[in-house]
Length: 246
Image (cartoon, rainbow, N blue to C red; front, side):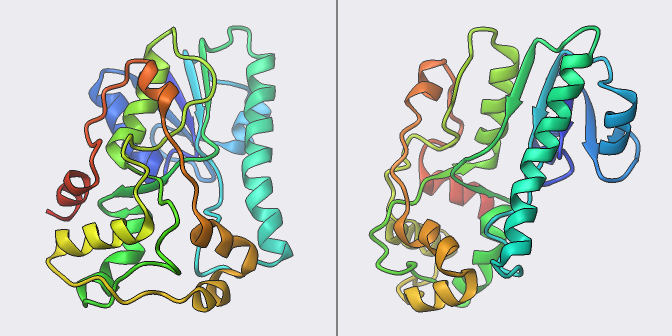
């Protein structure tokens, strides 16, 4: 298949592109800058959709970027980075002489775990120093997914014609609490993980609205993802962390 991936230069996009190419598909990325195997968003708007069998949109500013203050400007950036790219792709698909057979929009997934990026990148240093621990009470649910499985679910959705509707991008063992996750990461690193990060610090760094996402959590079960026949490579947290840290 020829697959167009919007926002394909990021952490998830790179993993998805590698997997698709390994499965024999041809990948074109849509990004801000031109390059080999890429087109820009401006080119998509002016020249239209390149011929493709499937389109995926992964574009979007990281809402939990700790280096950005949660002010009105950043809130607008988070929204527009998702809405404008989705609108642009949707318009291009509508005008295309031959529309793609599959169209996937990635809007909400669990905490993505993998080497070289994602949530683990921010956690490793304090945990390696023995300063890691649960966030707030630690009793909140902590839905997570290995990067390999997130890319796998997306590839499965593109390749299997019966897959439709909303799929939750989380691991089956996503009833993990934040404290259990901290303990598992500490174990994988051979370090203690009992120093909690107080709620007040989380609120100070992320702002009250964003802090809710980290302090309250959400219980998510991927029933429909499993029902499509997708086989997880990393269904259990311990094995997923071991592979990442190895």
